[in-house]
Image 1 (cartoon, rainbow, N blue to C red):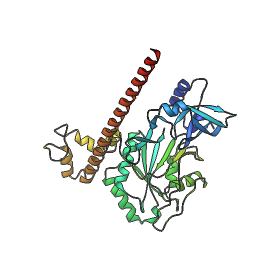
Image 2 (tube, one colour):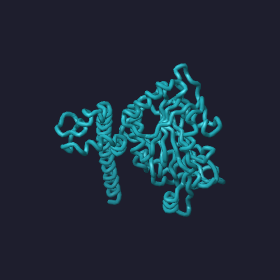
Image 3 (spheres, rainbow, N blue to C red):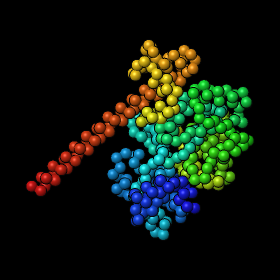
Length: 356
């Protein structure tokens, strides 16, 4: 296998030659489990760890390698393991607000071409959650495709109703309906998989991500759980992992996400709600809140039934959430920088006293 088979395009190859230099080689991160890494190059897969400088000098966890990253490495002991010295700039990424109260980013994966956003027709379907996924995907410059799984558990009328809900919400991404049980829809997914391109599966626990990978790869390399009486699969994926499918496409499986907090997604929000953005630019006032101002093009569209009230509420809610988290993140970063300057000043003063 050559590096281009792992997704290395000419532009990234040029960056690698410049950044890695003659002493380091390039590899791709295929799995991350806490501080443990797996990388893969033309010679195979091996465990790797970060240099101390990379691990402790990084200002944010987003600076550390994640699944899908291209990294500069030094292989040791007959290529039995490697040391990661740095990561190349990402052409695309997936990140979210870190779970819990901490206001920080959490990297999910990098250098992805297409994200399959998966929802189960039976228990997991939620348009509001789907909108959050699309904002995150658009923010990272990744193309989304929606997969509605477990269609064997609903009838044709219910399926049409679910698709109608998505379209009514203004979501215009491609929708593929499929069942890993009957095989319906799998051929369309396979048509979308291009050798050398990187795809990922996004969705809640138990929607069938690992089962889908096994059907696409033709084996059962990833463990799957039994299905409960509700049709909900039991979550089995415990870490993010990049695998090479039989046809040559690369696919990243990852654990389900319980939280999808919005942080730093202004561009993704505008892309995911482009219809509202286009209307807002026609409002009489540039700071229009789309509530009761005269000349509001958004309210006019709602009155004409060209835009739903629910979609506007969803947009305003996400915009308010990301604005709050962005402000909190900026304040925390400022405090960190101020503290850093205090430490540097103290160390400098101590050094001068030592000289005197």
